[in-house]
Length: 421
Image (cartoon, rainbow, N blue to C red):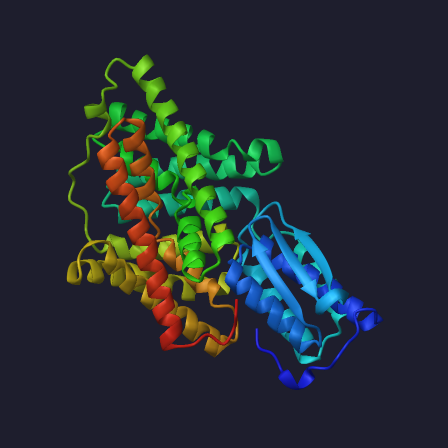
């Protein structure tokens, strides 16, 4: 969000105007945090907006809570904003950014801005649950093709993705059931992949399972955690990193549960039979179609506006192509940074041209790069007591996350973002 320093005036914390500003800033903090804004972006946005409105504010963000300290010295007023649930919502981020910009520029009163924030959050959802579950299936089918799967494996992955989307909706209705999401989804997707490999093959249960779980794999959280740690936000980055590790372990437990059930009830369920891959030749051009369909799915799942599907598709295609070229040219996991660099440049250009948050194309774009599938493979290796493979895979996951973070940092250095979001 852009700010006008000329608007800056001195305010007392006891003034009615200051109290209204504090209320607006607190609600803005809660909304931005609940939409998944990284700690360093959140702190920069809140402190800059407060200063423009005439108040000094120190913001300390961490997963689940944000501390706001207004004023200085012994007269400082501190607030704690609790945000127990984070739900990625790109349309809300865009609309909230517009409200914050208008308030900071003086064209909208903070009290009116507070009302508009409430209206944004309480507005009916654009995408109903059934459509969102179908979008999970669309992304899963696209991911299976990007993993070099066949059309049959893509169809099975779509079924696993729809089941995952349905579980996301059902578990989100209660805080108690939300903790079961990863384990339940891992078990269901694992069983679907194994049944397809054993009784409807040839098919790779690994491709089907990982594709079906793509949208709940904590690879994105891991990448954001590494990015926060690189920005020296140690508390938030460490907490988010451990949250990603717990999610990986829960998913691995669910997969192990599904595999154990198949080994117990199916005589033909051997580890070798589970990993039979299909060998049909597939036109490489279908990967381009898969990237386009994935962009549609990302738009729905991340609750972006329909018009944003174009820039999301551009970011995804450039990121995927850049990562492939970077891997071939540089080798290893470091080549992924080229894809992240291109995605970051798309986000910077989008911000400068449309004056909207860069996260709209960047977040879905890096979903084709995040190391979630690799990380889950490492957890499975550890569960199978293959410690050496598990440790090597874990190191590979960290390297991919660091490469993505480095690419985004380079993009910000080339084209400095106009907005902190």
